[in-house]
Length: 151
Image 1 (cartoon, rainbow, N blue to C red):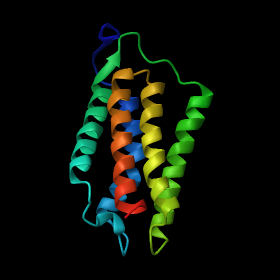
Image 2 (image 1 turned 30 degrees about the vertical axis):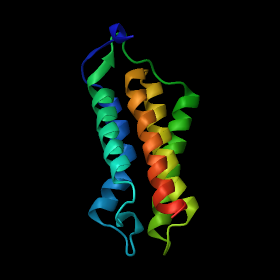
Image 3 (image 1 turned 30 degrees about the horizontal axis):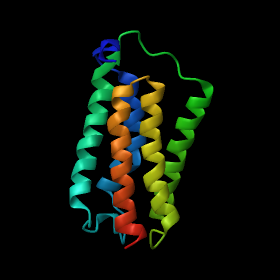
Image 4 (image 1 turned 45 degrees about the vertical axis):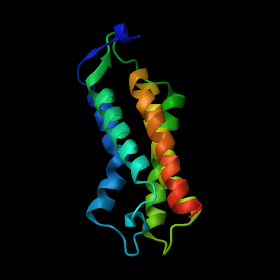
């Protein structure tokens, strides 16, 4: 499997990741009043693993490329990626315009970005990036569930 990859730079992978992260960057710079996401996490170990997996995902997505190049993703894949990003952005808009973060908003802040990372990995045909993306998804779901859904 590794024979299909080489070190390089995937600009589109980086752009897609950065687009997905725009709301997070805004939140870090200008958190809303009553920001429940800034509360101390009950899952610090999972959070650390999640962060490492996300960094690993980005590093692999951007710096490990297929030797045979990347084909243009199908229309269905493009629609799926755009839809998941739009849902994530909608989740942030709802988060900024609600007093509390209801479960639906938490799920919009959790599932769509993870799905986007998985879909980007598949669309870029970077199975190596898919592995940490799936691990990140598992950790992110544990974090959301433990901190906001069952707490």
